[in-house]
Image (cartoon, rainbow, N blue to C red; front, side, top):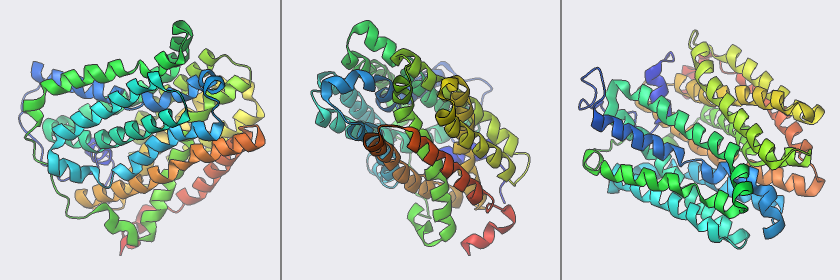
Length: 420
């Protein structure tokens, strides 16, 4: 059974790249060269572009709805479709990298993200925004599937360090967008500017990525011997995918609807956006601390159960005492933020070989993201029907209790038998 380590973190964050041999061009010295730092900066900028298209919707929804006449169900598609693309993209992005190369896939995917973001300035209805969400989502899916493999191959033994920066930048992009979007809309007197202005990050990322063409273009892309879908015949694979998917449901729902919920509670759009930013910052903290705490034993269940209690408490608190939003956002961020990496670590624990563990986590993420994509849609429909988000928060609290029951089954002593 595999214990959690920095290399395991690298593998779970790049499930389609675990078979890559470590490169040596940037890892033989104790310090990075100037060229290496430019590559790192380009990767960080790319990471910053992967969440604004989703994270800006929630804080800006109160500005958008009166003009576009969006129902909550329609608005949910703007979060649902990118997440759905992230799930489906896991299964075919690697093949695109084999055909065209990692550099080309990331370059054109980033152009798609930039074009979709910029197009929102001219959006005149729900259809325009929906199409931009689809295009941005496909671009995000391609980048997320390919970039970790580039990191692992180019940085070798330092890949976990660079991967940590990359993942932190993804969440930082979401937190920055959620915190500033409403302020930007108020300052510019235009939600379109606040929704599309993040294209600046994409342009900067593209310029730097283009400068790395010679360093990245000829990287070989490894072919995994065990395909993710080969795990579909095992019941435990579906259990792990369901667990990850339900955890991700919680994240996508708060990303889509927490600001709108607090605007309905009388908060300003700016304060509601900052609240989501706080939640995302707490996710970063928990995302690093929780795996470290869980690494002390192969049995991850005690830490997972604590995090699930935090998740259940946070969602229940939103309904029972919404005026304590700062507390519940912090509690939810700590719970959800730690559960995301731990659900993947537990998946990896089920396999001895790195390639098999990587393929299993790819299956778990592909199915899990696809499942989670529908949660904002369901929550939006419930809001339209009941005139309240409270039912959705209580359902998510109940899901946390269900996840506690599921987590008790993750006994390391029986992992091997689940795949025989």
